[in-house]
Image 1: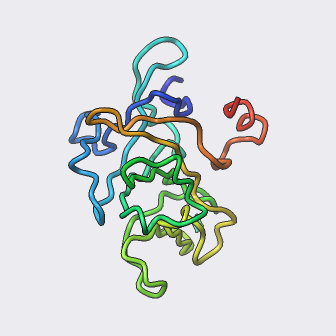
Image 2: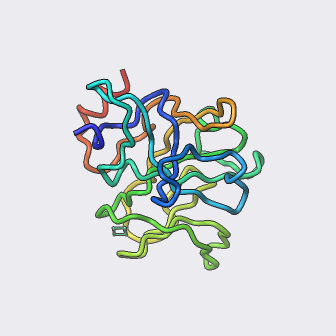
Image 3: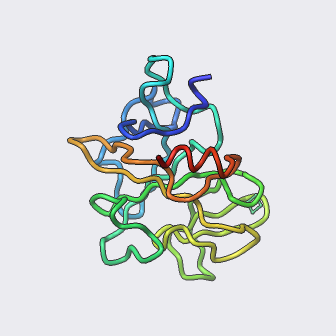
Length: 172
Ligand code: FES
């Protein structure tokens, strides 16, 4: 179904919050210390315009950091104005991570998994800083176009529930 399609270059990020009715995420809402949850919206393979909210890996975290706080392995070429976007689906068993402070690693804004305590550092490429996840949250390249945040490529690492060959096909 179109809602389960993968994010594609040119998709616009829209609010995940149902109260916002699929509106594009406003730049003014993406501030340092203020995370937004989003989905990609764009043209599906059958030509319809669709919010791709049908699979957990398409739930996205949109965060912003001062440029000097973004560190490797974040791909800064895939960011714009300090905005980084990651899949919200935990790389352990796939629960949706929550954004909250994680004082024991001195993080104001970490992605914390409610299921088994996985913790990711969003300013450092969502690397795993605690718990069982085997890999970072996949980063989705974006750019700012006008007042919108637009997808600018495919996930930079293999998302959950996607095979290696499906992933390679997307990168082409
Ligand atoms: Fe996230 Fe297990 S599913 S830590």
